[in-house]
Image 1 (cartoon, rainbow, N blue to C red):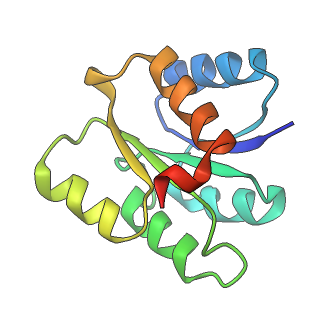
Image 2: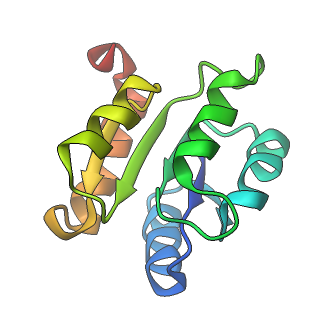
Image 3: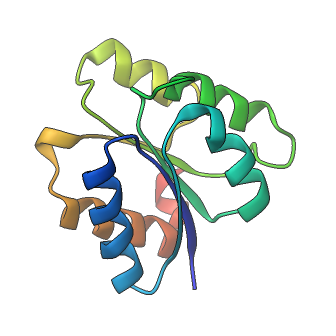
Length: 127
């Protein structure tokens, strides 16, 4: 069973994502803001983090930096799921170590779930 942490402050979207991943046999933890994200990730030790960038208390870029700065987490794959669709936002997230970047309005939940499953099954294709 794969374990993921979803860092998402939009409660309705977080719940739908959690339900969808759980229906695909994932173990899922939610972090509803950037401040609680890192402790949850450190405790769970997930196989992947799905990370929003626009978060209360601590933004997703800072969370991504924290993950990559933690020796125990630095190799943890992070996929960004955000409303931010600017080229600079995408470039920044990828340059900081995100494995992929989905703009919420352009990627249905089903596609995000399939991409995460594919990544966990075939991580070498994303190197």
